Length: 57
Image (cartoon, rainbow, N blue to C red; front, top):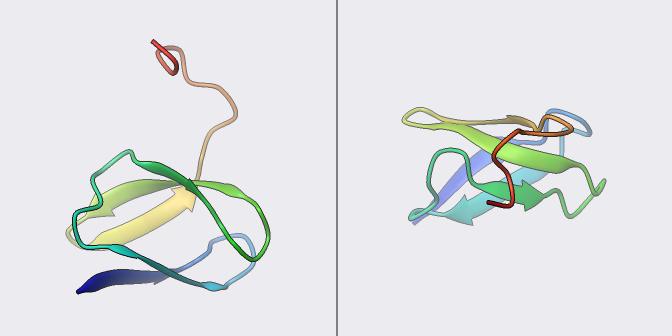
């Protein structure tokens, strides 16, 4: 089963595996925007912030 939503930037249909977790980063295949999973129940995605203090650690 997949989780489905729309890209908040270009409205493209986004489908991710059901084992996707909150705060997971991914790229929209249509517009290339960096997105983040804001919530898994309900499934919501939003545009990722430019820089997060602890990313890459």
